[in-house]
Image (cartoon, each protein chain N blue to C red):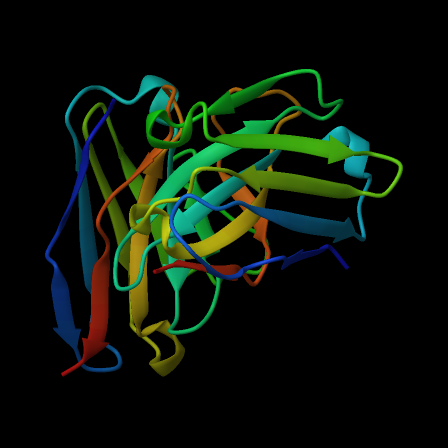
Length: 108
Length: 122
C-alpha cells in the first residue's frame, strides 16, 4: 500500500502568515488523486482540496493544492484564525486508500 | 442538506461484536458508494471498508478483513458495519463518509458523519 508522509508534524504560525504543508508518497499517486482534509478537535474531517488542486464546495480561495507524482502541497495563502486545525492528506488513486499522519497548524 | 448520522458505538469486551449504523439523508442515496473510516484516539485516519451504490460490491482493509462486514439497506438509506471478534486495536471513532463515485474504487469523501466511538476493553 502507498505510505503518505506529511511534514512538518506541527506548523506554528501567526494569523496572516502563509502555510505550506507537504505530503510525500512512497510511490506515484495515479492521476494525482490526492485530497486534503481539515479536522478540528472533536469534529469530523472536512474535505478541503482534491484531485489535487480542486477546492471543495465552500472552501475559500486562500486554500490551494498542487503537486504530481509523489510530492504534493497544500498552501494557505494567509492563515485565518478558523484555519488552525489538523490537516490530513489522502491518496485515492490506488487501493487501499491511505492517509498521512497529519500536520497540525497551530497558533504561534 | 446532506447528512450522515452514525450510531451503535459503545464499550465492548474483546472478542465480542457490535453493529454500527449510518443513516443518510439529503441526497440520492442509491447514487453513491459509502465508506467507513476510523480514527484511534490521538491517531490518524484509517480506511476500513467500502460498499458500492447498489450494495453488490464491498472491499475491506487488511486488518479487518474476515472480521468486519459492510452492508446497506437502500430502502432505509442506511449503511451498516458489523464488527465481530473485536480487539483492543479496534478502539476508535468510526466515521461513515460519502464517496464521490458509485463503485468501490478508492475515492475522496465530500461528506462525513460526526462519528461513533467504539471502545474495546476488558
